[in-house]
Image 1: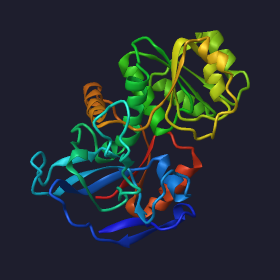
Image 2: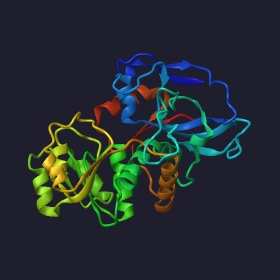
Image 3: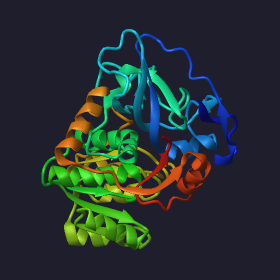
Image 4: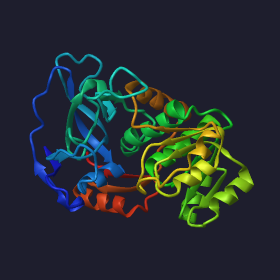
Length: 334
């Protein structure tokens, strides 16, 4: 098969399309002929060597959808020809609250979806929602799972909660917006782009604020008061503003830190509010099933930014690195 191999970390241009073997099929594995894949910021960071547990050589890509091409002798739940998507959380473990020590993410160190075929354990394969196109289905797994766990499991989302989502436009942030709105919460977003704020309001946000304005958080508090829950993938200096905006008993759930570490935190602001700051990573198989069921119930469709052909994966990663996308960047493979 043809696949993109990363052998060094000098950026997206380090990826090379090569012919590689699919590998021997174990009894509890399946081979999927991929129809589409999607990008995550994780893929871009890996090409620059900026990710924990780097192991090369690797085929990148955590998200994909396709058709079962072959099944191992012990596989009874799927047949050749079934349309599926993949859960990129490998070896999560039996507990929902934490992952096992063997947990990894599809697409480094194990081979991922920037390829024509993918071999993986059958336990990580799920029926593709029929209402979604191939690219829409491929855009769901990593980001939607992260958003669902952040909101529902770790964030303990309640109806009528006021939820703050900084940096709207990324895959996880947009899924968090869609899930929270469908759940019945009130959502406020931030961005440096007025266009992205306007699009978020079209998707159901009640308001948005430009974080490049020095007093944005003061305006938010004056107009809407304090928030119950913040879902943050930004980190950096603005994280302390999120603490300022959290109400009594509120929660901040952190799933990433694209702006780097948080400067000194004033702890009294945390404990006097009886608030929680919680971390989260991906999600369990049970949460993946729950997320898919929630999406089907509410017929949630991913927001897609731009589609690329398989021969243009490097260009797609370069666009990801620009950070201007609103929604998921996808790859047509089939």
